[in-house]
Image 1 (spheres, rainbow, N blue to C red):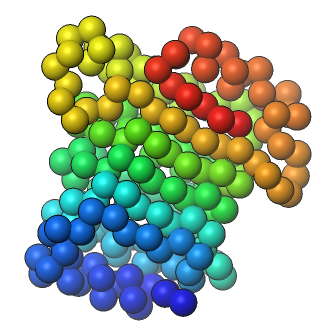
Image 2: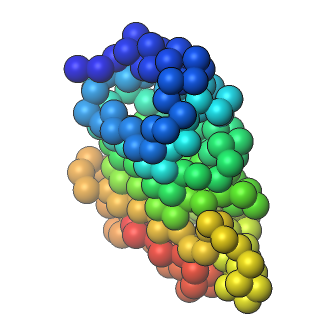
Image 3: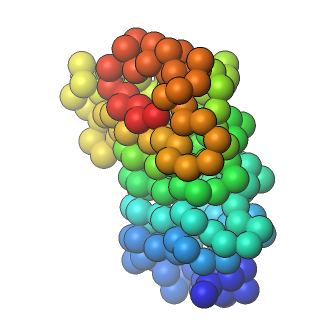
Length: 193
């Protein structure tokens, strides 16, 4: 199984320019922690790869938490807008991690179209930073559709935050209507909860 040492080696190779053509990185089901995630995100942010797909779900051991989200968000914002799919299911993300990732997705250059965060600790009503980021994403998508001048940029976002085990599912919580309201108000978003 891959751990932080392997991810740091990948980051070193990326910084040396050896992974410029890397488009997909599947690291799900390993033992990567926030330290490894931050190392990779730093190399990626600095231009070490042009990822389109990044899969980091189901890390065992200490795994990934909200600490990793700002590093990934910085990489998404600085990576020329190439990333289209990010999967971090079964991690330790909460509403603050979601907010960081959505704020990056709301940046004008983001191409992110799918954010899969199933089985995390994202519960309750959407926080104000999450609502604002979702609104900015929807406004950007509407502007792209109206102007037809957004080559490669985000036109919609599929956000998945389903809870399939442990605790109550979001569907059953009092917060579900608040998420449904976001879906209704922002038709360019597909929110699965």
